Length: 488
Image (tube, rainbow, N blue to C red; front, top):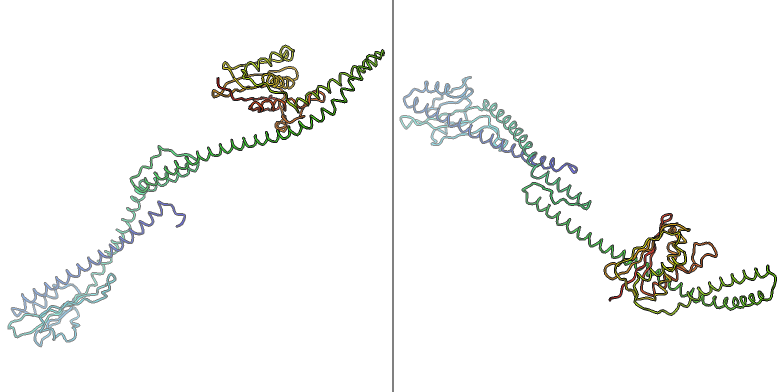
């Protein structure tokens, strides 16, 4: 019965209990009826004996009295009347089976009733009963006794019929109980429990319908529903707290990763800065000599072809000097001149410089400047150079034509944000974490040193700002620069 449904389980047990109860009630009622019936028979027989005694014996009509007994008693009855030394038998075969020492009862003053059969209740069975009744005779000196044995064989059919009726009524009542029990249990207990089971399944999915009506008056079921709702609310509260903690952990982890990257970048920049300063110094001196000797040769050679070669040597020397200057700027940043400036104006100056040089003539530049002043403490010239480098990078990514969107905005009342977005080739995901590394570049040889974004990042960090990048290949790149505004 382990997998038996609740409805069937309860009905089975109720049916079993009711069947046992009805069976026992039937047996008890049958036995009680049987007892009353036997008692009625005995009382009837005693009434016949009293009528025989008063109506026949007292007037000396013993023979007629015997005939009266034969006719009045049930078929199969037997017995005898003893008066003094005379015995009068009455039975169909004419032979009365009399108890031993029946004469001893002549002087008795009590009527003795005996039942024949098994008397172990509720399994008692009775074959018959006997009555020994002392007679009152005239004159009083005369003694007599009447003995009557009444078989109960005819009574067995009545008992069997009663037993059959008991069994039939038991099955009928059990059937009625099953039918009514099925509907009552379904409505008051099983259906609400099935709804509670469905509610637990919904809770497992993170849902709980407050409009669910379990429709029962059973207090325990209602308490269980209330407990489920309380459990759901507690789970939701814990879930929200867990989500909040997870979000905080994500933020902390993101900040930790960012700090780690910045720390690694700072260490890398410091090491490369020392290396760059040494390399620039060691290369710079020989390059100055080469440049000087080249100019001296140009002034003393009349051959135009040779003079052209010397000019090319001079140009390449100047390019090397420019790289050396960049290395020195990277290794030994210029002294900062901090002031509070409007970031809007700084970005506009960078755009104007590039526009005047014709850098943006083939580019569709869309600008959206904040109406609020974005006051940031910074070195204006260095910050202009940052935005010039960033815009030039976007122009290079467009390969001569495309759209650049430049927007400034004030967020949360104290955060200045600059967004620079282009629809160029984009940066592959595996290069995103490298673009701020010194000397990393995807440009062709001779077109970039790979120091521009590193210098931009260092300058922005010096002014307590942040720079981040998001990019998607074939769709473009977006830089985001954030500063904390100073109070007016």
